[in-house]
Image (cartoon, rainbow, N blue to C red; front, side):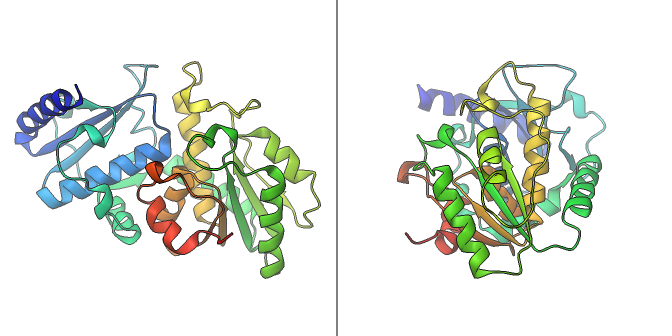
Length: 293
C-alpha cells in the first residue's frame, strides 16, 4: 500500500514540478512543528540539489481554507510567481512518502542553517516577539535554556523525571557559575511549577504559552487545539532557546531545531531517542552533546 502511495505521489510531483516549482503540502496531524521544520529542510536540500524552487503548505485535520499555516510563520526569500494560487501542491504525510533517496541523512547543522537562510525567513512579528522577550527577561544575563518534554515522549525516549532534570540543572550551574538566569520551555505545566518551587538559586523565566498540558497529553495532536496558536508558541520558544548561552534539553525535534537556528550554541542532551526513532538532527547533535550516564 505504501509503495503504491509513493508511486502515485511520485507521478504527481514529476508532472507538477515541470514548471520549476516543487510544491509540497505536509498534510498530517502526526507531526509537531519541529518534525515539520526537519521535513522542510530535507526538501530544501533536495530542491537545492535539483534546481527546483520550493513551496510549502502545512495542513491538519483542522482545515481552514483562509489560513496558510506555513506562511503564518515563514516567508520566502525568493519572489513567488504571479500565479502562485494556480500552483498545484502535492499532499504528503512526511518525506517518507517521497521516492527520492533519504536526504535526511545528508543534512548537517551548518548546511541546514545555510539552506534555511537561503530560501526562507521567519516572519517579522515573531522575531520582534522573541527580541522583546529576550531584551526584557535576559537583559545581559548568561542564560541556561531548558527544554523539557515529559510523559508524552515516553514511547520515543526514556522518561526523565522532574527530580532527574533538577539534578542535571544543578550540575550545569555548578560547572558554570557565571550562569545567572534560566529560561524554561515546556508544554508540561507541572515541570514549570516544580522547577520554580525548587531550590535553584537563580531566577527562572518562561513564556506565558497559550496552551500547556496538565495531563501529559501531546497538545499538538488534539484537534480542538488551534494549530495557529500551538505553532506560534512552538516557534517562539524554539527561537528563544536558540538565543540562550547553553541549552539543556530532553529528546525533542523542536529544541533540535533551536540548534539548527544557532549551530554554535552549547548543548547538553539528557536522553536519547530509541534507535528506531533516531534521525537527523538528533543523530548529529547527540554525537557531541549527549550526556554520558
